[in-house]
Length: 132
Image (cartoon, rainbow, N blue to C red; front, side):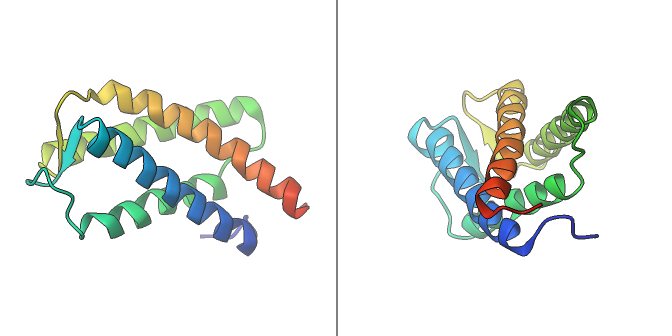
């Protein structure tokens, strides 16, 4: 994959995206008990590396190819929301994720908010680091 993001940006964004993924999953999955990962309602240690690695990886790939033009970005973001929602639907189909009050369309809304935030955060980091 061609690198369009500076190493410092990747480092900062990786940890920010991992934190967002972990916090939202703890809030919606543990505190509000709207879904479970795996067969057990308990949090299993093996879930943590998956949650800490997969969302930031997708986020970095998303940012690496993100267009600057707003209209192109809007189409790009919609494709990623559809992909993310489809990916989550697959995890439900294979019983890795089970809903207990959560709906798939909630995820599409959350993904939309997250992708908008990721774009804002990326440009914020670029301004702070003064990356051109």
